[in-house]
Length: 261
Image 1 (cartoon, rainbow, N blue to C red):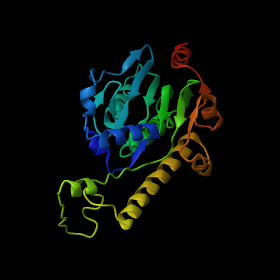
Image 2 (cartoon, rainbow, N blue to C red):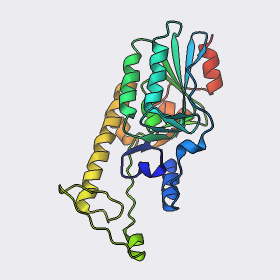
Image 3 (cartoon, rainbow, N blue to C red):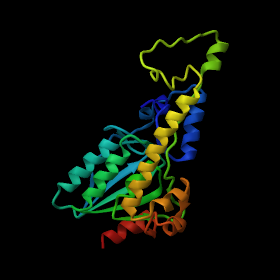
Image 4 (cartoon, rainbow, N blue to C red):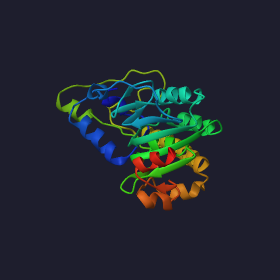
């Protein structure tokens, strides 16, 4: 997936990663995230009665999986289905280290995991951070552990609009839109963003933001207003536990070892 595909669509992504993407876009680099990876998707790791599914890197729609870099929602669900259908597996571990990613797809996956809790025990173990879309996934598990120097949260949505119009003017390039439908072409980076377009994008972000709040509130049995008051903040270790976003502070190694006992 090219970096430009993150433009003009709602993201459930932690702010520092959004800043990185913005810098990449402004620099003119449209690096292919897939090209940064070295390992294809592995089958679910099975150890005795425990299945460990790695959820690491930027989260995107689809079946793509490049270990440690990019993880697709469909790829995660496929591994979950395999584990749910394996009679030997009693516990499914979601081993998460991700800043989040594209909003589209993450709430459907969160709903799937929430319903799967009725079938098997599902644990979310944060191997560092579970932010934004990654936290939407983690929150659906029965139990969440977070390391003392790792974080959870960033329950919010962001969208980026990049305006190239002044650059095009400088280069002597004029773009004329010819459309059918008043809103067609809205958000095109070659033209300035109108107040109406900004309002409609904000409405979409608000809609998805409320969906995020309601999803986490259901998953974690928290009051929606408490989550709203977090203002998409991130919380390290024990602070995440205090907020009700995690259950215990533990290193990933310790958490997995305890599961095996």
